[in-house]
Each structure stands twice: as C-alpha cells, then as structure tokens.
Image 1 (tube, rainbow, N blue to C red):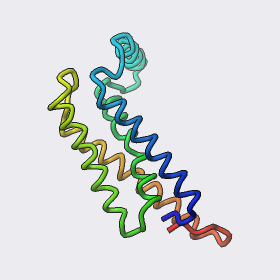
Image 2: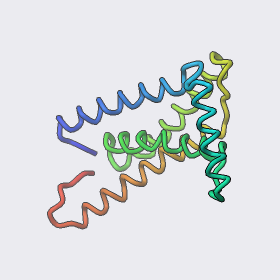
Image 3: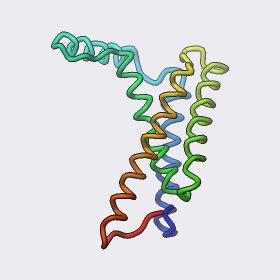
Image 4: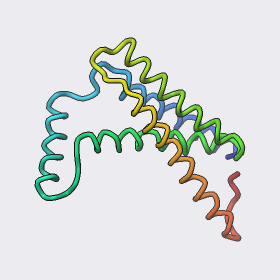
Length: 147
C-alpha cells in the first residue's frame, strides 16, 4: 500500500480518470463508429492473410483483459497486501455492474458473462504484475518499500 499522502492522491485521481474512461467505453450506446469497426476487421483480415493467427473475437477478448489491468494495479496500490482480494472482488463486481447496465439500458450493446470473466482476469493480471514489481523492489537493498 502506498502511504505517502501525495502519491495516494495521485493514484486516487488516476483511478478516478481510469474509471471514467471505462464508463465511457462501456456505458455509451455505441463506443465506436461503423467505420472504426470496419477498420479493425480489415486489420484482422490483413493479419490473418499473412498467417498471423488473429481473430476479431480474440482481439475483443484481449481488449477486455487489458482494459482491467489498470484496475488491479491502481487498486492494489491503494490497499494493504491482505486487501488485494478485495480489489479482485471489486473488479468482478464492477464488470458485472457494467454488463448488467448494458443488458438493462443499452440495447445496442452485447453483455456477456465472458466479459465479466475476462475483465476480472485483467484485474488479476494487474494485481499479479504489481506483486511481481513489489517483490523485485524488496530484493533490492536500496529499494523504497511499497507494501
């Protein structure tokens, strides 16, 4: 957990901006224009034609994981080591709330349980990455401690 007050304020502000970005991406009726989706499909087709195993569904799944990595990192910086499970639970709950909102209020969006699983995986990856960095810093004798 980051204990320096200024650093905590910066992390809280970053987390708030991040969550606003996630809300913008997930809770607007249409996040991207049809032209942007066409460009993505063209890029996937171009990569596939060159024997690079990419699919639109794979890109979407990876994007769901990557989108929640900062959730795990920022949340992990704000809680103690024992509280990191709460960050994972909060990531899952946030994703479930997003998908439920899409189901109830956004008929143009496609809510799925798979997105909840992928988002939660992203939060776990962020927490794991943070734990690796913290552990590496602890092994250095001159490292400042982050717990």
